[in-house]
Length: 412
Image (cartoon, rainbow, N blue to C red):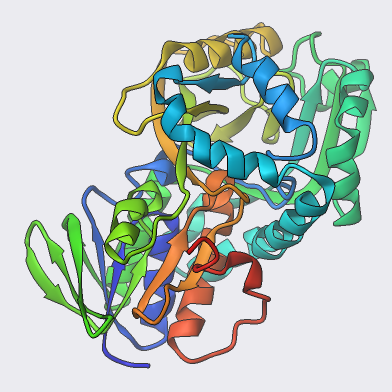
């Protein structure tokens, strides 16, 4: 397929799609209302989370979620003023919280993220962006062996997919990760994963790679999609009309209003994620880790130490809440009691989440618009493979993956 292709959204999915499409010989223009990676692709934990195959909505999540939502010391928060609008999505989300659907979601997630490190390396090899991708192990930090065993359901699913942890207990934990304080007494480590050393700089360099390779990038807000006989012929932006033959919609949570213009009301809600970025930290861990009790990730980066995570269900129109940031701050002090730093930066962004924890990838009807959004917590992890799949589809190639779990029309 030839002609002009517009990619809407310069997060990791849009950047990856644009680069792979350009490498396939297409004329590509990437549009974003802000700079490259200005949203969740900038503020994420920076993990290439190949192990993140277990969705949030596992059996028992409703009871656990209600308990968490009413406790400010737990890693789930709800903006109660938004709750009535959230209820239809929550009902669909809850309907998937059973063993059969969990295993279906695990299968879909495993296929899209299981080779993330290799996909990032393939995207960046020989380019200015390659320096931001590095390999590492990954650990879950528990306060006791009993806390680890309480996660048996999720670990059983990980083991079935080949993710078998090495367990350390007692003083061996601090020998492996000297930064951890005595609160952590059990470490479950997975070998052979990876992380990004600076997500914001990585996105900026990927945009430069696109332009180095002959693609185009423009800062413009896409406000509408123009269809003729049901098929895209252009997009309307704050900088005027732009004709195209095909488009990729990779705008994260901002894809939802554009989908409505295509006649599809996608059940997409924002999981508001948070991070604290410690500048000039006195210590850094040897490898990234997840603090199991507070559900936030810790990642040593080139420009500081990032602690990112928690979930707040709510509006995209309201600013940050203090409670999730306070939880990360308190959790960090608890597990890293000797950590000092020069300063701390706070951030909040939106993870675009579907009720079945799987992204939308592929053509929307027969419109010529192809979806690449809805990746919830795994956007950075799955972005390069998502982009490569879209490039194959638009080049008339058959991707070597079953695309049924990501059907872009499954909610229509």
